[in-house]
Length: 220
Ligand SMILES: Nc1nc2c(ncn2[C@@H]2O[C@H](COP(=O)(O)OP(=O)(O)OP(=O)(O)O)[C@@H](O)[C@H]2O)c(=O)[nH]1
Ligand SMILES: [Mg+2]
Image (tube, rainbow, N blue to C red):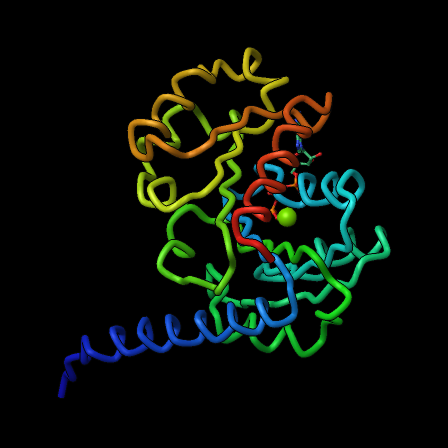
């Protein structure tokens, strides 16, 4: 006989995730680690941006590389001689607080100032799964099309910092960068939106300044 699924199970998973996210943030605060959940579209430049920040920021950095198969990005981060843990999500299209809690035990948290958590490239699934990070940085690029923001509003409503990357190729792909910026602001009027090119370095120092000011606010 056909069995109907219980909706409550889903609800419990979300509640359990929220509880674990709170626990994660307590651990991070105790260890004085500022954590950034880096979300965004597939191929938008999340790994490239974190690599640039590792090189440019004057802090001890650690990375959790989450992906369906994490060894590719984890391998890139390891080349920068920073502590890295890869988290394979398999068929799942997002990280969750439980996976991140596990990764903590493989990281020297007492030696890390900033922990970047690269989430799975996806603009929908990760939205509901708080990881316990202090901020959420959403990275998209012009090559996904300048209607990306309008089509995926939720992730931008919840963002603390939005990066619009690959502006060096905006003209070539016919993307209107200013439309993307104003679409983000219409969903989240207060959020800082930074246009970047990791090929030219445009915007990188603005991202660093913005992260530094979040760290100051958090008083970690
Ligand atoms: N033209 C241009 N290419 C870029 C820029 N930033 C990143 N790329 C390229 O875009 C491709 C994807 O970059 P990644 O950093 O791997 O992107 P990602 O978001 O981590 O990708 P996934 O983890 O697979 O979702 C690479 O070939 C990068 O060299 C940029 O600002 N301009
Ligand atoms: Mg990546």
